[in-house]
Amino acid sequence: MPKRLAVVMVLLVGVTGLLPAQVAPDAEWRTLESEHFRVTYGPGLEPLAARAAAVGETTYERLSRDLARPPRGKVDVLVTDFADFSNGSATVFPSNRIVLYARPPVDELSLSHFEDWIELVMIHELTHVFHTDLTGPVGRAVRGVFGRVPLPWPVFPAIGGPKWSLEGLATVFESAYTGAGRVHGSYHEMVVRTAILEDAFESIDRMSGTSPAWPGQSRVYIYGSKFLDYVARTRGPEALAEVVEKTATALVPPSLSFDRIGKRALGESFTDLHAEWRRELEATYRRLADSLRAEGLTSSERVAGAGYLAGFPRVGPNGWVAYVSSDGKNSPAARVFDPETGVDRRLARRNSIGPVSWLPDGRMITAQTEFLDPYRIVSDLYRVGTDGSEERLTRGARLDQPDVSPDGRHVVAVEVGEGTNRLVIFDLEAREVRPLMTALPGVHWV
Image (cartoon, rainbow, N blue to C red; front, side, top):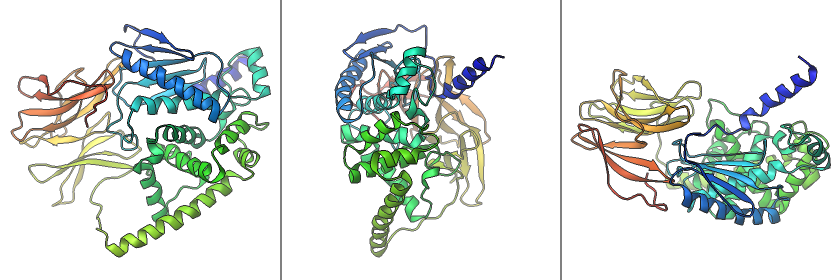
């Protein structure tokens, strides 16, 4: 293999994680355009697409003023409703593109603090585009000759920076421009506060890592956003724009010397700023902890669960506790815990994490995502036995968060679709879904 071809293949392998997944090619796609955006959307999503374009234009103007020079050409936005996930992504290869999954993040602990979810995710992803598209004179020269080569420094320098700087910046702006978002929500603060009080606060070189230890891959969002928010509050509103500019014009790849960028932009290294931030948090939260202890705190006892998530506990008719666990090493699983014996055992593998609800006969109803075809991933209901047996009850129904009626004949669930959701009743005997209400764009259920 020629050396030049080998280098190109290595570079492409290195950036494949940034590319969005494929979407359904057989859907009826339409496109609307605004001054700076080309929004492509699937069936039933025109109002959401129009809202994304409107938010995009407002955000484009603000980011051009507050953060960086805008990217050239129109930004492509894809609004898709073929996956029951709350997510979005942005890429600069081979052009500036954003993908928005049309599912409100109402059941995501860290994302549920919002007024308009499409505004929140659009601001976040467009900040990524402004941040990662920006380059200096050398990068512009390389692009002028070779095009948008998928190479971090010097073509797209910000991509080579620590991941906390990428996700942290976008999260700061999602919060600054909406007054909501994760910086202003309680979840990120809770994680940081707990880490301080339990002497488990992450050092700056671990803020971009992931592991089976809490909070797993959420570190980059939690620590990155709270840290950069501290930098903006203490060093001025223009501080983050200066960091972005110095990253884009760095003569040394940011992946090798990000502290040097901090010194050029702020006169201080990020390592020193992180230590200062930690001292402030320790003083604030230890005072808070002392005052709460004086009032009296309820003590807790760990009884089950391992890894970074054990959630949705429900007590069954036999006194067992069903819950869902994810240990960061294996697939998520439904589990049961017997408080009498202390036995904690795995029932069945789960593709996604969500509530379980007991049936009167000791079995459980749960929901999980599964492929309908190579392009569609939707949530359906399943019946799980305490022996680990599993029966799929629906196919393509897009039902989540089930709760069983006391007589065990019906299940109330959340039905997702077209950028919103509604409550429905599923008849376990007839296997039929009946809506409880009309789905409305600005009303979400959880």
